[in-house]
Image 1 (tube, one colour):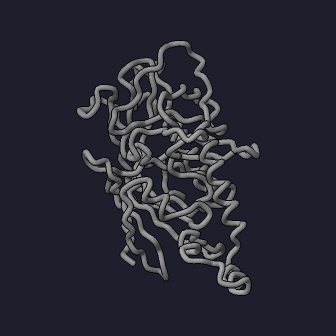
Image 2: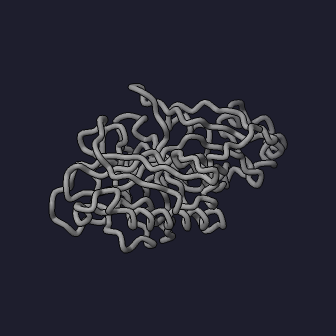
Length: 321
């Protein structure tokens, strides 16, 4: 394995007191936003973009936005518009650690509001929450952070690097579209962690409006879970399984097909639920300002309970990530 880069920090080791912001001024790429960048001061005094590693976590809920709603209607014009990811923070130690650090970062953004938007504009802007929550049909609530994959040029193909770890060796996997990822990896069968950059700080040019930050996934490491059995139904049923009752029983003895079928049904139901997830109405009756440039395609997220002091985000006109 390659030598770790000391400028890439495990999220639990990030000291947000070392994260420095500048006022958002101008943006040659968007007529809708002003922007700036944040720098992180490392122990050796160098200052760089903040790159952090997320904890390893099970892929148990949808990461990429579903392509269709529960009625089978397309939610996006192009597959490239789904190049986003929700990192769900479960009740595991890793999930709790990630949530604690994201809460800390959100508090930092509230504190630094006068610097980011300008002292004269403090009352005109509210923070775009970096955390949201999703409630499933069992009334279980999961907090999440929204990231986006890095994409390139006019093709909008994903250029985030993906690696699968096998026997301690990380092998690169080609993923160019959200569909590529969905075809290669299933929920419940893998764990993953990511290297993420704090890619920009922004505020809307139209006031009153929002300010916030964007995260970009630079790399994703995928580990196949050794406590579950992956069943490839396509290969399993590629040839006749009716040769004899004895052989059929033998071929299926090592796999639990009922579990796999139930997992597929649960995946479809959860995708539909997330596609239908709604954001609460904003308190203000004023028109919703234009939020993002086409390149970033940021959408509002439902505020998490841990950030109750932050004003809820307005309903987005775009499909939910």
